Length: 126
Image 1: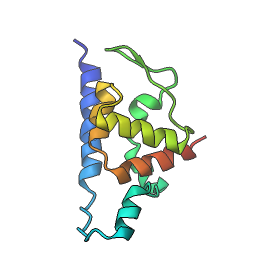
Image 2 (image 1 turned 90 degrees about the vertical axis):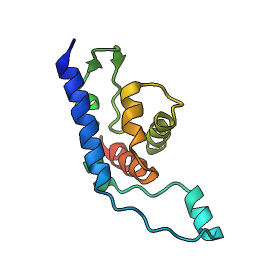
Image 3 (image 1 turned 135 degrees about the vertical axis):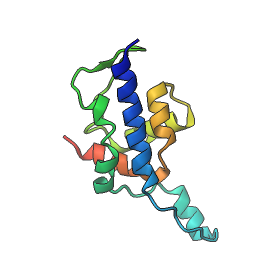
């Protein structure tokens, strides 16, 4: 058994939940054609907020050439990826269309706004 990777994964999950839990719930609004159109359009990302959310991403994606121990996966570089790619990838992990246990666990805790903020920040990195 490898206690460090398990402990590190658990710490990442707890940190992600702590950041997400600090967000106040959005007030409920009546559905109008304007709000329906706004909901269909991707949310504008806040790179500054995304930087805080990306704290847990650095644990794996911030290490050049990192591969997690089990199961063995290459961890891709995400800094500087296109915003559209990052939004799509996180959304697909959240919905289960993409399969990776750690990424699915991370993405399940993200709101649409969290994903937009993460994508805005990560895509701004060089």
